[in-house]
Figure 1: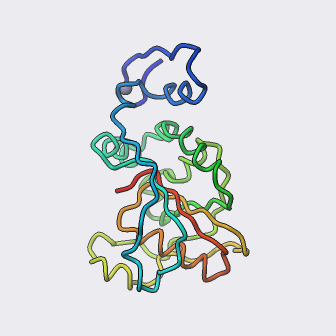
Figure 2: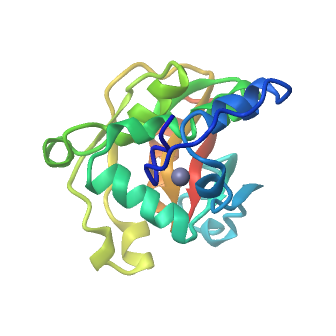
Length: 207
Ligand SMILES: [Zn+2]
C-alpha cells in the first residue's frame, strides 16, 4: 500500500507484529513514522497560576512534539485539506482516550474558518479514531490571538460559549495543538463555570 505522507509504496508489517503496530503502519511507512517524536507527557501550566484561569484545567496531556515532521503533517492536513490524514494518529488517540473517563468535547472552529478550511480538522481526528464527542462549545469570535500579547489573550473576553447542557461530570477537551494554553484554559473555564466537575485536556501536539 501507499504511505499517506510520502506516497511511497510499503509492505504491510509481518503478522507477528501486534495489532496496534499493524494499524499504525497501515497508513504511513516506517520511515515517515519514525520522524514523529512521541511526547506523551502531562503539561505543566503554572503560567496560569494567579490568573482567573487558575483551577480551570485539571490536566493537559499531549502526545507528540512539534518537530519538522509534525509541522509538515499539520500543514498538509489543515491547510492543504487532506482529510485522509486524520487516520494517521487514530490508533494513538484511541489508546489515550481509552484510559480516560469523561465527555469528549472538541475545541470548535469559528464558522467562518470552517467554511475556509472545508472540514473540522479537530473533529475529524476523533471521528477517525471512533471516539464519540459532543459539541457543547461554540466560538464567540474569530481569534486574532497571534496579534495579541499573552497578557492580552488571557484578559480577553471569553473565546467560547456553552451551547449544550453541562452536567456535574468529567469533561475532556480535545484540540490538535497546545501552544500558549489560552484556548484550552478559556474553554475549561466556561465548562467549570457552568457546572463541570473536572476538565482534563488532550492534544495531539505540544507546540
Ligand atoms: Zn512515508
